[in-house]
Structure formats: C-alpha cells, structure tokens
Length: 124
Image (tube, rainbow, N blue to C red; front, top):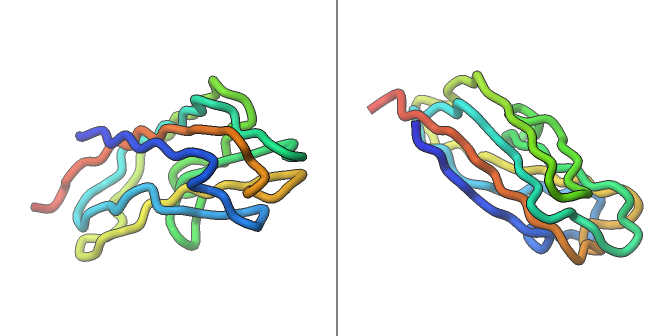
C-alpha cells in the first residue's frame, strides 16, 4: 500500500456557494483505496462562517470514503478504512467536498487540510 498525501487550503475550496467539491487526485484503474485520513492543520474560518466541514468521496457520493469532518478548528482528524476497487478499467476522480455554514465558501480567509490516502494496486 502506498500513502498519498495531498494538502488543500481554503482557496482551493473557494466558491460563491455554500458547497463545493474538488478533485484530490485521480485513482488509477485497478487500484483500491484502503484508508483515508483527514487532518485539519489550520482551522477554516473567515467572515461570518460559523461551521465548515470536509468529506471525501466520488461524484455522486461525496461521503463514500470519509464522512463530513468539522475543520472549523485545527487539530481535528478522522480515519476511515475498508474500501473496494472503484473501477477495473477507468480512472476515478477522488473528491473532497466542503460545506460552509453562515457565509459562502469564498468568505474563508484561513484553513488548511491534509488528506492521507492509502492506495493499493490490485490489477497489474
């Protein structure tokens, strides 16, 4: 299993909306996600934002790999595991979804989150 680390900041999720999802990385065909850890390294705050959550999934199921975690404060983590292969033949976009309460996502002025994703190649 390889661990992929990807860090995203408040500016990556910025949108004139209360919700936004972005690609974390492309999962190659024949690979399986075996674990996901979300680590809020800097709290997501700004303007009138009163709550901010991030989940991990795929288009159509944005909480498939990790349920929404509050990243409003730094120092929160969430671990998930035991997943299956997405596709034997196609690349899959692994996505992070942000939800803001109190103000639009583009009101954020701070925030950083790291994703640690365990990936195993099953099919050669």
